[in-house]
Length: 347
Image (cartoon, rainbow, N blue to C red):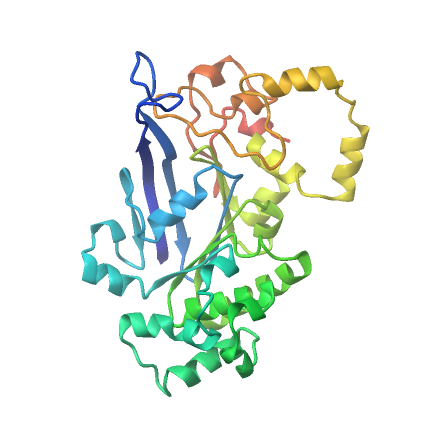
């Protein structure tokens, strides 16, 4: 049984006059495609990891899953309902079943509200009084995420980053959701604290049977959380499969690029052994259209009329076919999907 099903979801935004490509001239794009026909399903009690660099469309997709934005085409079914089709009252009731753990705990918590009241806020919004009363139940939730009862009287700025994220998690659990969207939940934390928060999320999932959509730019982090991974690039899902398989044997060049960006002794040695690129040549390559992006740079957004494979400008395996024919996701082996004409050749 799938708690979340995403079916051919497309999200386009119109480009108005004054944009780089939206002046309305002949051959110019009139829309920007942030999500391009993405499909996947998340089984109940499992974690689906959505990975990609900034600008790949993963956060736009999360907004659609959360009912904060409607798709241009396709549909989402979360906890048995499509949020885009619900009226105001039904949408509010549906949101009790779908919650979010956001990236920035400092920005996600009201600065002038004490921690206990923050955790109680979902009950006030939905007119719910939990058994035992709100204050006692909030203290129980704080204890479940590793915070002592005394923290209920603290303000967010009095807590560490890891403690604030635990408050965010406690608040997300208040309404006993079935699906939790974890949008870069540890990216703002120190590495040692990241491990603690990830372990907490895993424990809560085991105890409560939660389903996670776990979004991150870091494939290394997602590997330790996800049962299945989907890799997004410029709005499209370019690879999907079991987490261990994708990590061990990537079947898209972009996935390989993400894996190579994970620090390791082996990869560091491989980079040191590579021939250095002259400064002048590197500068010329960086300015060339379709050149590889610097680490951490955002992927350029595709327009709706673009042809060919969006990754071809960065791909060492690109051939003429890639410039004229966009690869469609295909099952290259049981449970493994890749949108690459040469998926079997990726090493």
